[in-house]
Amino acid sequence: MLQTAEIQQRFKSVQQVVNQAEQVCQSDGSVPSEIRDCIHKIAEQAGRAQSVMQSNDQSSMIQAIDDLEAMGDEAKRVCTSTRPSPQVQSVIVRVHDELSNLKHQLH
Image 1 (tube, rainbow, N blue to C red):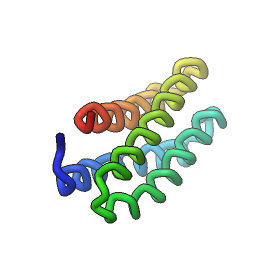
Image 2 (cartoon, one colour; image 1 turned 135 degrees about the horizontal axis):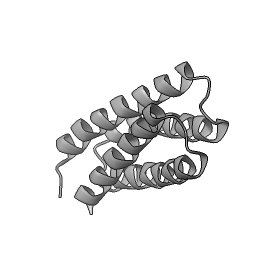
Image 3 (tube, one colour; image 1 turned 135 degrees about the vertical axis):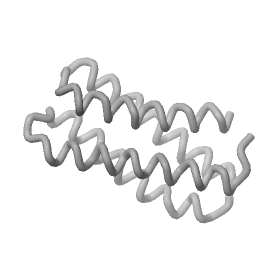
């Protein structure tokens, strides 16, 4: 089980990848709206989760990561069905993988 400080540090990495995905989706006009919506929702949820990460309440932190990971799963499913550009697909997979790896380290 990760310690609180480690969770917070890993979450910062997740946020960076989510921010990068959001930038890629905004700069690429050919991104399907379903993917754009998924990434936007993940970014919003990550913003809300930021305050949870500062709370030092591990159970709330784990729940926030679990919620984000489920959203990452959805983004990956949408990506598989819509077949965006390789750059977009790559960044979506990175978001999913970061969230999934963190979740599995917490359980």
